[in-house]
Length: 102
Image 1: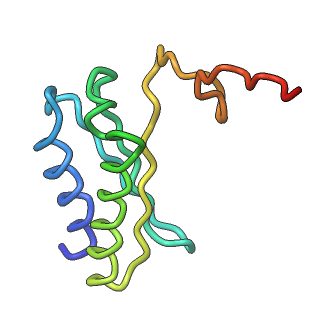
Image 2 (image 1 turned 135 degrees about the vertical axis):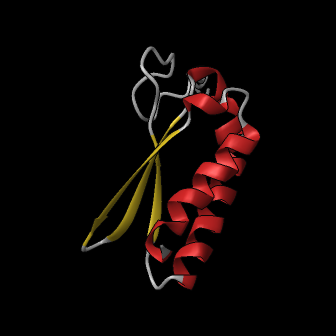
């Protein structure tokens, strides 16, 4: 039971903040590095999960670490990018190129 508390906690938390709670899926994997929770949500809910400048995702990861510490486990969160995402490759934030300094 204690081993699945992190998974249940994450599922409860995410379902509370998204508009499509039926689309929330959490997968749990355990290896020598600790526990990895993979989260999949509806593409329309990604903004709610990530938050402005990633602050919501950062807060969720902090809470999961606390749950992990309580159960003597290292818990990490991977937020799966939905298919058909408009975001480019890692590092491409849609920023304008910098103007040359003269």
